[in-house]
Image (cartoon, rainbow, N blue to C red):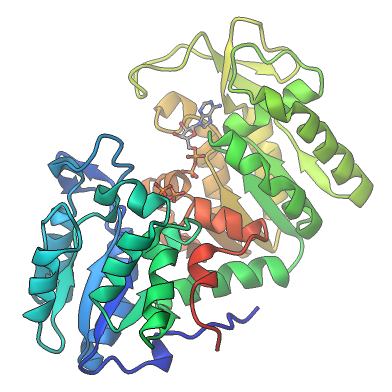
Length: 407
Ligand SMILES: Nc1ncnc2c1ncn2[C@@H]1O[C@H](COP(=O)(O)OP(=O)(O)O)[C@@H](O)[C@H]1O
Ligand SMILES: O=C(OP(=O)(O)O)[C@H](O)COP(=O)(O)O
């Protein structure tokens, strides 16, 4: 499936001010970046614009910024790492206002090929997340052209992803997508539009409400849909099983019933855990030692919580992966941060690493699990977007894509 949008290859940035929205939402621990994947993924587009002789103005959000601007969510560590990666200075505009005088001055001082990084766009609060007109215009005022390369944020209709483009257009500028956007969408698009079959989709994790919605669409495309992690218990409850204190979305029980009927009608396999690793409560801290037992999925005691798929399920899922030619995986099979509860996730990751099938991983935690296990380079594609890749697979148009100019 081709992406019918203008890209960085359609522009020459020579002497132009180019605003580039990246997804530099990287994990930080004590101010240190613990995973630089998203920074590395943004480099080809940035390098192309530098080579063009453009004035490259980068922007991104970082974290949720729930309590207003703060140093802990500043993009300063990203500027430093980016500068190391590019081997050139990245001027960081630390002003919490993001746009405004400090940013304007920094941009005015730029020479062709220079790079500036603006402060965390979410420091502008709802102006960013509610796609505010004023902030969108202020961003557009800094630039002549706009590039969206923030795949991981492209499902967010925020000012720096979507709103800004209207004002770039109004001043005669172009809005294009970057190489990362192209790469992600080509890969994900091909995987779901023309999958080499059998096509197996695996869904897990804890963002149950978000992820359940993707199932209806995926069922039509895949041959087998595997459910694990926190997602599974709403299905098990819908089957009439006791699920104890496991994660459940009660509002989605009817939906899960419908999905099981839909799978049957379409002749698709919908695999649910046949056994489950349970414990008295959620581990606290998450990697604390924990006493667990394994029960069949229809025998979870009322006071116990399901925290991983059991060994029989792990085998069943690994077998389904073995016969697949395309596998899409989003969300761990259990609380993999805890070594005792990581077995299901490890088994599935291992089966993906061992297959010759095209393997696509989406979601921060799934990617982290795969990388931590040392299987990263065994996968065909690790997406930089969790929510974004799922919304794309769901068949929704991503605002960050929609906002770019058509070819
Ligand atoms: N059975 C479960 N109960 C509660 N949490 C779970 C369960 N299985 C997995 N999780 C948690 O799900 C989280 C990842 O979910 P999610 O954010 O949806 O995945 P991703 O980041 O890959 O999109 C992990 O922190 C993991 O501990
Ligand atoms: O980390 C991200 O999403 P992801 O965890 O779904 O991959 C993106 O940077 C989007 O961040 P957001 O979910 O705070 O809008």
